[in-house]
Image 1 (cartoon, rainbow, N blue to C red):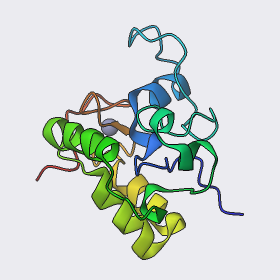
Image 2: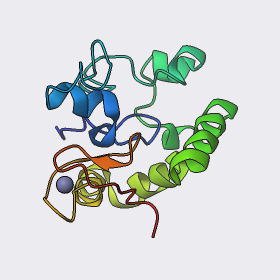
Image 3: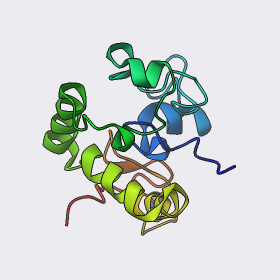
Image 4: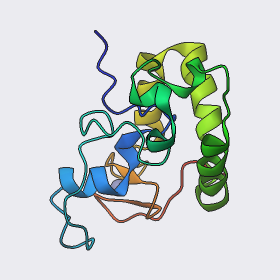
Length: 142
Ligand SMILES: [Zn+2]
């Protein structure tokens, strides 16, 4: 079985999330966070934004939103727009890419994308910086 713990149903890569990285790197207090997150799937929340409104995700009838004939539903469109506006990142685009190349290759791509060009550390999309050296960067821009 593929390890897809960091690939959320909505197309988010959990490895670039503030909650995930702060927990992993022991920065919860510094970042003003309480619990952090080990990834949507491990937490069994599926998607905090979509799951409560989606019976298919709730009942695990689908693993990713791209498997759904209604994609993109209004919930997905909502979160997609928020991330495009704030971070130049499209979950719908990510989902199409997962469908195209498979989750294993996609995770590899994402890992490389969010690796700091300066120090090889991990980049947080929400803060737009490398959590290891502090470099300000959004890999989706430029
Ligand atoms: Zn760095």
